[in-house]
Length: 349
Image (cartoon, rainbow, N blue to C red; front, side, top):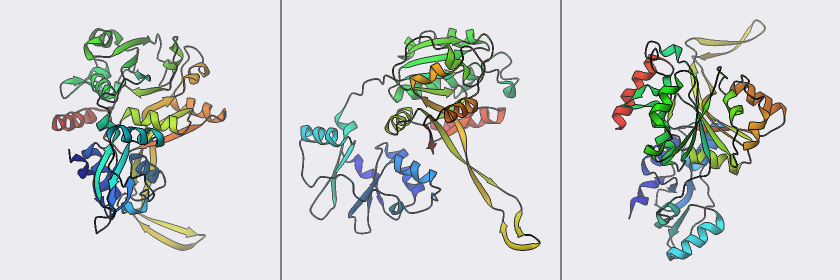
């Protein structure tokens, strides 16, 4: 009953500490207190992602980015009153504090709602690639069916999505697609529903979207079939909806250190020497959310990669968003990645 206490952090704790706290507590909020244990603000996953995009150092204290005017209640509430307030203000957490602003409890929507119904969003998994860089592992096995800790990569993806209340799947097939379809069938043994798209010729990382010939009424999520991640797929869908996106791409921060001292000059004059600088950029993480209307923008059965699709969306003045992720993320592209993933997932097990 006191598990909420795990999400209390001193406001001098680092943003990295907050990320670890969110992952361990599973409560989706950090309650920040000062050195006298007085409640001073809240921090959510969304606050952290915005800070990452703004380039704020993860070693910075959370007091830089906490919400200093959070919702809270000074009154003990009944379950019905809690539900009414959470719904009224569209929030998931409500701290209960005393007159000295010390935290006494945390009312949580997930704790009250014992049942969470399935989302209406569909997940499309791109699983048609040849996996040439993983040869000979993929000589007689499609890459998404390679096993990580005893299960195919695809099964890990589906199970993680199911934990996030996604139960409706489409799998795009090409190379050795029959192996995938024979294994997963209609998905009923995993408690999900699976349909299949079949690429007669390789259609790139986005072209299979054009093969969808049945109605999709809600934003749908796409993932590459070789991406393993602990991302909460429901959260990226909510981010897409909350920010009125047409297309959202998950991005991951990538650091590249120059092994040399970099000399900056003005003509012949040296103005600065920076020793082994680190360049920070964002890479495509292979997870996306699209509005249903995007399906009609792609020529039927034509090759298209994701960068080209996003370029078209930007030219058409549609709203494209970046969703920074800090969770575990692995692109299983080479034998080393496969070995590393097995080690990590064996440890997790």
